Amino acid sequence: MIKEKTIQAIIEASKVEDVVGDFVQLRRRGVNMIGLCPFHNEKTPSFVVSPAKNIYKCFGCGQAGDPIKFLMEHEKYSYPEALKSLAAKYGIEVEEIELSTEAKEEKRKIDDYYALNQYAFDYFKEELWNTDFGKSIGLSYFKERGFREETIKEWGLGYAHDTKDQFTLKAVQDGYKLEQLQTLGLTSKHGRDFLRGRVIFPIRNISGKVIGFGGRILDNTAKTAKYLNSPDSEIYNKSKVLYGLHFARTQIRKQDECIMVEGYTDVLAMHQAGISNVVAPCGTSLTEGQIRLIKRFTPNITFLFDGDAAGKKAALRALDMVLEQDMNVKLVMLPEGEDPDSLLQQLGTTKTEEFIERNKKDFVVFKTEELLKASENDPIKRADLIKDIIQTIAKIPDAVKRSVYVKTCATLTQTEEALIHREVNKLVIKKAKDARSKYNSQQLEEQAPFPEEEGFSNIEIKERPQKKSTVQGDEFKEKDIVRILVLFADKMIDEENNVYALEYVLNEISPFMEMDWDSVFYKEIVQEY
Image (cartoon, rainbow, N blue to C red; front, side, top):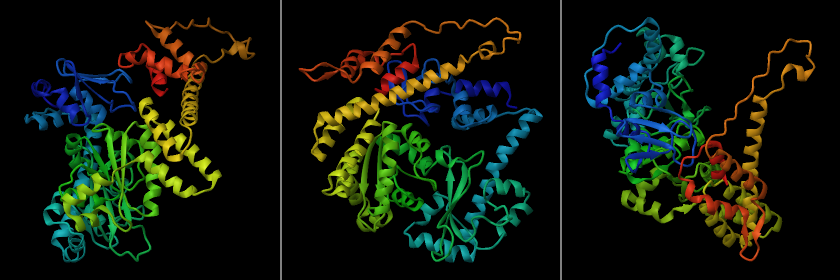
């Protein structure tokens, strides 16, 4: 346990805006700072940081606390771990006293996982640099790919020898348990080295700790997966981790843009060339968790995809999910047969940056153009294409952005703008109605019938508790706004000027959308509209 004197020194030194700012993009609003909450999915910032009070508060999900609480909730640190992290950040020496048995056990388990990954990290590096096989096979591969020694060392790349259980036996001999090795995916259930015969890419969390590994096979004729990745564990969730984010986060925030590539070597090549706001998924298709992770640092994301059919398919698959998170999305399709690594080798850094900037294409425009090519002159395919694009546009939370995309889509598809607008509004309204229906269902579940209403009159029933009204302040007005939108949003109220109730209501209440509402739920429904 850390001494009280040290705890107080840490508390006094810690600044909430510094700590939260490492994970969330904050902007100044008066005396406070505001950003997107890292604890729940939101499209409008409701996460407020108060430097004066040294606290944070989310008015959406209710999470609140000081710098220590933030690290405990966000990084899943124990209280002592959060204190030690802050002590390291502010250069404070930690003095400790004895921990409880239970706290020791829990801390020991997590520490052992991190220690084992660090052990494996050191082992794979040693194999790469100081063994004949590592130097002749692993190091040669990296150098053939154009990676300099300083890059290989900075990123901690390694090599795993193609033997059955060399690493496992050594780790067990050095005191690690087979169960731990299997939990972290370093050893298979059969007791064999999981990543054998591969070059190794360590995967770090946003704080820089090694939480997993990716391994690429060097024999492309082998009948096995090209890449293997660590399984999920208590310290690693691949759907919420991005390769390279620990190195890229500062530049992502500084440049207000994240570049997403497809593989580990693409990330390495871009960073080595000085393009440092680049990340990649860790052996998965892009997930909502990864998108939300990027959005903490910037709302702007640019995808670099291979120009072949698989690359285009991957781009289209990611589109709707990214737009739902209210991101500003651009796409660069590389020439067929090229990837970021090969493009850099051909063009160099400056011309590659110019190529990316020159070839950025709006994601929705890209999808429309690609589907138009596929539909050719078939009217049935063309109708299906327009429906597909309308569904994509309807996923965009921001009404202004939707309106812009409606105009663009109408121009590209040569379709009446009012028709597309109407169909998009129908989908937006349906989504809000579905949300309302779900909410009503939850309310009904909370008010489930008492036994006497189900024919159990012979059972002694205590007096039914009266449910108190939860309406507060202006909530009844907020509810009425939602009611009007649900019932009348698609009704024309001014035929001469082609104005729907939806537009009228949203225009009238727009000044209030930046304010706190008494009902977060009602505000979220209106935001969907």
